[in-house]
Amino acid sequence: MHFRPLSSKWRHAYEQDPATICSVVNSTLHNISARLASSLTVNAIISAIRRREVVHRLYLGDSCLGDSGCVRLFEFLSSPSALHCRNSLTELFLTKNDIGARGLLAVAAFLRNNSVLRELCLSGNPLTTDPEVIAEFASALNSSRLCTLQILHTTSLGDPFVRTFVPMLSTPYLRQLDIPAINMTRAVVPILADYVKSPRCRLERLQCNANSLTLAGARTVVNAIEEGNYTLWRVNLDDLHADEHDGGAEMRTIIWQEGLRVLSAAVQRNLEHKVQIRDQSLALLRCCRALFLRSGTVRDGAGTFPPVSVYNRNSRSFGLLPPFFLLPVELQQEIISYLAPSLSHQQRMRIVCFAADITTLPQLGCELDSVLGRGKNMDNFSRTGHGKRSTSQRRQPFDSEGTWRPPTWWECRCPIEVRANCHCLRRWRQEMRDMWLTLVGCDAYEPAH
Image (cartoon, rainbow, N blue to C red; front, side, top):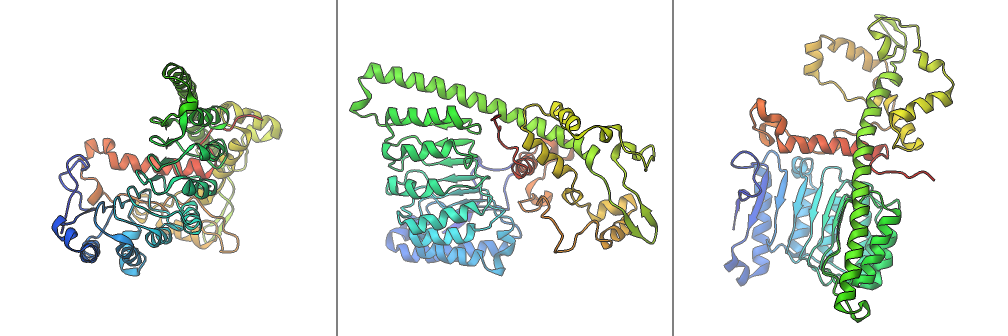
């Protein structure tokens, strides 16, 4: 048993990724004693985590963990000794590890309130059909910021898993759900249809292929997407195991082609809406920051600073309001609507409220403060209670740090001139943007009612 870096297919721009741990189990040892292999694997994984300053990915597929090894691993990850790993781990792959109910509960405990983990793969594990265990896992998922969940090729799950898991899904952060080849049948099609057209669904990608949904069941899901879903833009319903009620070969072909046409039109519509909503939301935020964000009255030894908008700071007209604020509120809202016509009124107002809240501004680092020569002023600003509200009055700010941040010393060794094209840094910036869009409810199109 040993640990090696990822293959060249998965590597970053540089040769090896020191933040990735990939386990390989000796097949001979596995054949002799699965329990011994599990114990040795967990020991090796824990030792590797202790040696790494940052652990970004754990690829532990086919590592013979089992329930006992899984429980032990997550007990360690939840301990103070693994805090550095827990605060940086964004990808966790546990494919083919014979994880059952106990292991799934351990995964759920680690996932609960986890704001860092982004991808979780449990494919090829028996897991469980126990409703209580599934409900615990779904509840933990809803409390996290997981974006991708993969449960592929687990035929033991079937309809009982879907009946418990899907109706409980309510997380606004989940973007990709892959559940192909889990032995779903047409009986759970109404559950899938209800989910995709409900406000609870924020998925962008859904894979349900290689299940026995039948053509009629697939068309029901497609109709639900067309009627009430504005987020999905990649859907896979292939290999449906058509039954005798789907007609002959020619009839099935016609039905399938018509379903694909409707699905293609729906996902194209959603993709266009997604781009419009994202671009207009970001543009509106920039305008509203300049227009609505105003510093309060700060009293310290230097004196009093009156409210001032960004527009009149350069002219130092501290006591004057822009003419915009002299207009009736209805006209102000109408003008704002022209800046983001694709957004609903509620979405625009949420962006305005966010932009006007000074606690949502990112904190300047000490290094930047020192360069700008205002470290002392920032200290005074914080002490007055304006930069930091009291615990009883403080509103929850935008948690831009509640996710992984790639340290340049291990995640990006690209030269400065090409760093703008670094895949990892682009991914981090995209996640920060997506987190903000989700926070203000502008991650999906809201049709007018």
